[in-house]
Amino acid sequence: MHPAHGGAGHGLGPVANVWGPTSPLGPALLLAIWALAVDAKDQQQQQQQQATPQTLTCRPQEGLPLTQPYPPAYFQPTALPVCSQYTCSCCNRTHALGIYRSLRPAMEDAGFSRACLAWQTRMACRVCDPEVGVGLKPMVCRDTCDAWLAACREEFYTFEPATPSAFVGRMQPCANTAALGGGGGSAGASDAAAASSPLLCSRLWDVARTGEELCREAGLDVAGPGDNAPCFDGGLFSGGSAAYSTDMCVQPPAAARRRTQQQAGGGRGGGGGRPEDKLSPAVYVVIASVLGALAWLTFTTRQGFKAQEDERMRQLHWRQLQGRSD
Image 1 (spheres, rainbow, N blue to C red):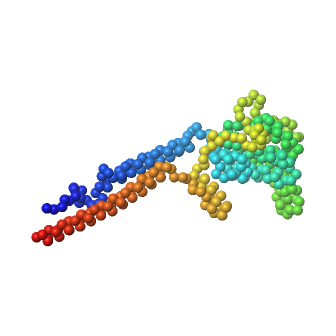
Image 2 (image 1 turned 90 degrees about the horizontal axis):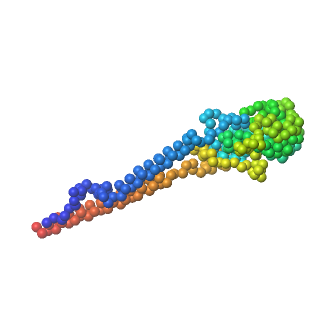
């Protein structure tokens, strides 16, 4: 009489029942396939949402030159150098730097009215309002034009900039060359300031007697009394703070976010920034399923080897007993 041996699968080794009816590898594999399918579907939906034709795109206009294909209004990963009140905008850093260069003469002129400078900045930053950028607010509110004129009526402006640029409007504050280079600065700085100064400056009150005239001279459309369309108010009705909707805004592409955050991290000493893209829950499910299946496979394989060794020892012991009885 011999001891009972294993069934038909006994000779296949300790992993014979890995895919048996009690094995979790089958359900784990199915769960991983399902998670990958869900993740692929989510990514496809996100790409379709980003590429949907209903997404509003930015429109090129004076002070906001753009190249095709026109982008949507993006949430800004880092604040713009100027016009930072707009956390979502059609402007990029190049546009913002162009606006800064147009405002710099007034910023560095101590005699330039600070109230006027505040209004000039609001109007220069108008194109960075996302609703203006995508064309939802194509006109300027009449009261805003009046407030702009009231703040700047005594300041001098030019409507023929010495260095025209697509990034700035047609109306610019006049530079005070004495403030920029003539008072104690070098002769070269004074000559550069004079060269960049406009050829003809006029007191604003002599050019425009009403706010509507001012805005039209600046190339802006003014909302009429019967216009029901939204208009740019420059913060006039919100205590000076920018009021705008971000419903049309989208997240910037991952490459642009990575480049911007790396630049910001390098400016702080190479901090490296945060990870760009978070793993989706489906990926975590796949990882957990695979790790669980591997752990179970390792455990069952070790148990199989142990059972096989125990069986071999029982057979050896049985043969030894049979030899003694003979």
